[in-house]
Image 1: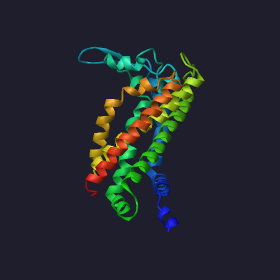
Image 2: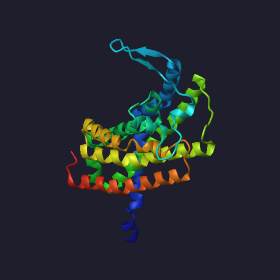
Image 3: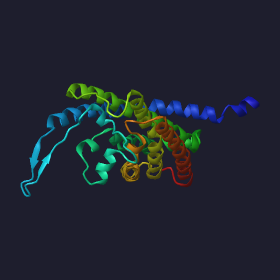
Image 4: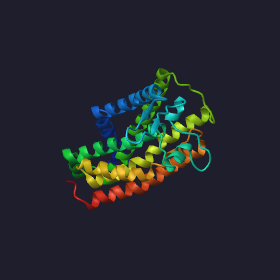
Length: 275
């Protein structure tokens, strides 16, 4: 009798749920398409901006000239060096002069992560998988935890693919790999912090997805709207000269957002219809 009672423990339920979700995610062609795009994107950006660097365009109506500025080195597509309370990218944005290099960098992926999460969750409700899952065996809390972990793993792959693509793109474009204001240890901490930071954004997108359920368009709109409010914190938490403190802050943020918003997602699933 005791063995039967222990046969459906939280650990076993979650382990089973994780196996199913990992298998479902990594058998979806869409996941490999998204990761592939993340790999190719920095190559295209670095090559194109290097080719266009110094190009002058003239507005025929006002006569104003605009000079296209490319990347000075490969690492600019990963981030910028913190110079105090804010990064140079922040200063550019706040001053209204958002440059091409400050927009076309790895931070764009935190919006692309919303696409991955929303499609993955919407497919569960559209196909009836979620309703059948909750009816047969799984608890909604298990579902939320599993989706958070699996989507975070997929999002981390996107970040790493972009980083690898940046190295390839820099080599193809002939950009220098010089490190000014940071070293290898800081660069590793920067990439690690950006990878861990996905655990802050994934729970947000998961809440929007369970609210919208099968309505993918709604979950994407809600995710993009909320993500915009947190976008400016990315360069501040993950500068090129990041330290262990930045990584710890991202870990703490991921834990807080995961627990807090995970509870919200669970509440939404419990209080709303599954169709």
